[in-house]
Image (cartoon, rainbow, N blue to C red; front, side):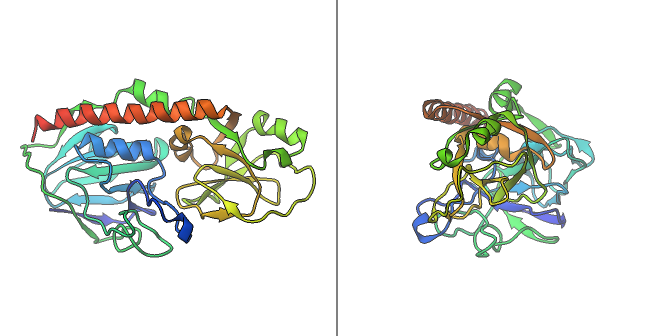
Length: 325
């Protein structure tokens, strides 16, 4: 059972929830940029959390299905078509053998996830199937997917005579709770917050930041009104995490993302809350947003809400797919 990449995209990789327990060795967690969308992609097709999915950017690959499959598309909307018929994101789809999945144009978002019932076969490295590009391990040969790559997946028992949308999906209400308002990113104050001068502290929340084109899976570089420290300071490299907002020497900021390093020496002035990292991951370069500082209690409560939402969606999707398998 397999798919074939018949046209390569830009940095399409296999990803899962990331590696746990290796930061002390200098190996970051990696994994999907949008954990919320990745998780739901798996749930919609009846998979568990650990299955690898395909993370796609635009321009996106074209994919030939060499066997019947149940798939889902979540996250960004790239105007997907199957055999030139438009299909929606956040739904489960049955795809017939020899069908071709294409993506015509970006509508919104930056990271789209493709899952398949049974899960893609991916190399496991240090407990995760996520592609680690620098090491060249995990995922599919440790690299981005290329033309003529063939990725196997486990057999789907369900059969159908035509491509069709299956009758369960994620409601717009649930999506709005996680992704709106798009231009508001919440964070908590970082360890070095008080190194900022008072004007910069105020400007951090008042001014817009724009995601630079010099952004990738390691970090989103931001353009905005420069922030200043009270005085020049040299710091010892310390632990950082996905969502850490560091102040660069030129006064601009960078938000560390999935493939971030494990330590850094720039001031950690804030940290994006975990519940808002999926939303940040979907903001395009050139788009603007504002930071809003919230309490640690709110950050924890919203993370628990997101985890509870995912748990409920998982249970509901698994009950639905059992009726078809």
